[in-house]
Length: 430
Ligand SMILES: Cc1cc2nc3c(=O)[nH]c(=O)nc-3n(C[C@H](O)[C@H](O)[C@H](O)COP(=O)(O)O)c2cc1C
Image (cartoon, rainbow, N blue to C red; front, side, top):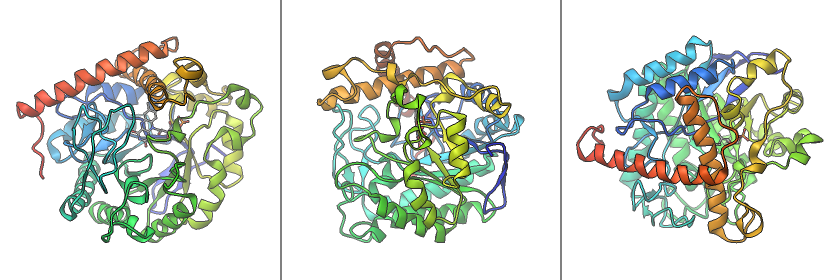
């Protein structure tokens, strides 16, 4: 089934069921524009023929980044580089959709000491994130305008669709969660109010891109933290998204506090896995699907063709979302479609700094955070290599990945601050 096309509610067709899920690239120039490295990276990914390629987080506001290497789209100033990026994917017959995003409190100190958030609830992960300022009504209205403006520029640049990032604890996901949203105005309290910002953003983006342009939302099935956004709440939000009219719903789970979407696999489980154990959020798909009138893309953990086919056949998902395997095996969909590849590499079990106190399940928050950063850094390194036209480097140790990641993020953040000081960044419009 994976080779079959899928027609979306807006009328666009995806050529097969492989969706490359978003992975932040960290390859932007100091002024936040896409670069030749994006083109090389996506050429290697698109050569595998996945129907859909989602970009990594593209930020709507240069003051608040997920990471210093993010692409920022506030106006037309970087449009030529965006066009060149989309052209590369189109040359391989695939579609490029832009994931558009605001990090809220998950904006590192290297970018700003005072991020924005629904309420002043600080994220405590290895001291890396400042205490947020609670957003005013004007801040919230500005975010809605920015999502719509960024989507319009990306459409003009030739991107084939946009995805509104409302998962993984970023701003829109913070609004959905009662743990981070303690507001008592129209943007907080009851679920209807907590979902108000997401639904307003969908409405504004739809108004700016028109009825026939694909809009996706990435949503958590649950935050998997006490007092966070739950599965029942997620199902209700899916009902409202169905009424609002979107074209593809991507389901994930977790936040920076509980990186559920980033879990290491136990290879023993993979070998004799049922498809349920292989894909971590598939077990929530049936109840979400019952509330949805748009196609679903479940992402997280798919590693075998048998698991993917079984998930599609069961009707629980319409697209198979995959991220990490693209970093080691960039063109794997072509080989799966040709029947010459059954399973993807699973390096996650090796990407740990140690065992016990040093390990990913350490009781110390800081060690868990370092292990997560080592894993992220390891994949960032592979993405950088593909962006430089080099082969992946699977033998890289997690320690080297961690140190390299800290060093490079620091250098990028300083370069971005210099660019902002010298006025080479786009002007921020408020
Ligand atoms: C290096 C890296 C960067 C990521 N960046 C993003 C991102 O920008 N936006 C997003 O929604 N998810 C991001 N993710 C999460 C993936 O989209 C996906 O949900 C997760 O990796 C689980 O899928 P997988 O098991 O197929 O890797 C990232 C994951 C990795 C490994």
